[in-house]
Length: 187
Image 1 (tube, rainbow, N blue to C red):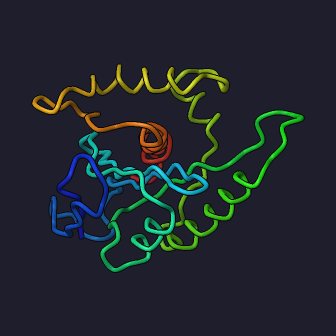
Image 2 (image 1 turned 30 degrees about the vertical axis):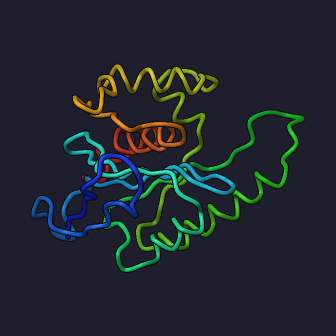
């Protein structure tokens, strides 16, 4: 069963609808990817249609609400999932409560998405893919995405990236990275 939200922006609460989008059945090629940028209290997420290179739905939601949605019958119907993984990015860097809270939430996400066997991906790998440097800044990655998919546009004339903001940029980079690196091997 194919799934897509009817909303380009906002969150799933505004547009929760399940319907056939393109006639694909279970077992068909992977095209819809759920990518998640987890945080301590809220997470950015996106459902990316890799065939048409477009955003089906996106949002930034409290972790408790997002996890409930994933575990519900009305959760997203996607063929693949990717979660940004916390990594060690330098010596002498202390890890505080927020890092460990995020790690615990990543475990909860993996459990909720266990049927998809979500791929855990480190941020430096995403930066290397887009900018050819592991230490590239988020703004550099975002610019590569703008160059590839066009400007965000306006409300009257939205582009492919209209509504992308904050944590959604990281989720978008994760989804596109996943599609670029792994879908050739799956499809």
